[in-house]
Image (cartoon, rainbow, N blue to C red):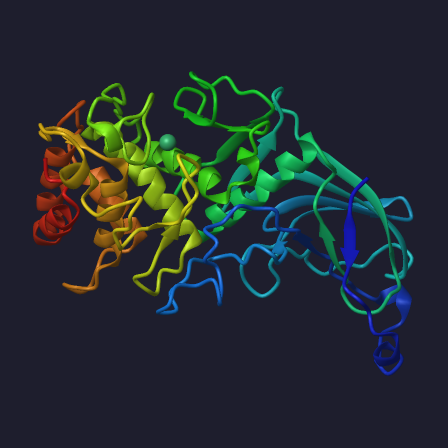
Length: 395
Ligand SMILES: [Zn+2]
């Protein structure tokens, strides 16, 4: 059954609290999802880099508030349904309520793998689109507001709740974006297998047999595709068929470092950028990202490394580069467009979406040119040219 941890209640302190009469007491229940995620490995000292820069929006070994989750709480046969609060004073908590018969006693609690965040539904279903449900009993002593930590049961419902937790954090961080419908399935209908965003039903598929439901960067990447679709109002053109580019630029499909048509490099690079922006603070120029293949060494959005060099296309891949790009270079270009401070004011996350929205519809191999047109429209051509040359995407 459900694994739960309860924050310790201090009985001695409670004895001195002027707690109102039980029959009139109000209480709020708070919920946290225990963390089970892959991260960059650079989330805190001493694992941070020498200059102290770190990923991380989340600390992986800490639980996270269950933002927006749909919860039914029943006591004495009387039920109330809540969408837990989002960021703010009481994230992951119900509003205060008056339980039947007072706040002390046994409760039945039902968590659903569905949430409302920023007025958008996020539904993590199984292969048949069925929402997972956790039902468990909880005894509340009647002192204070309980915090209940859950991880979900093993197997399918665990995967659904795990994906939902990362997705709700993603959706709460950025107001922009669509409602999200996930299928968290042991096998997925994505062409070629694995994880994908399906343009038609506007649905994400996250693989569970290979552990993709544990990868918070991967989950945010797929959400990034949905956000781009929502921004454009149409499916983004992304031709990922080109794959001959030299030893360090090959991939059977598309990959972080493969030489691709730049429509693919833009769309996939944006999804990587989006994931990086979700899990890194917006207040510094450091940024770390974990890719899921071909190895798990962290990728810096800013700095070139041995495995992920700066200007991958120009330094590693065979010419011609016209109409081509790599996802790595495009991720860094978009991060720099978002983050490089000069000239002020720099575009924020929505400014990146504005650029994508302003760009005339691109084809297979003119994505950089059309984004350049979009930058002209926005009066940001200077900034765009700078980040394009810095990262070698201007082809
Ligand atoms: Zn993708």
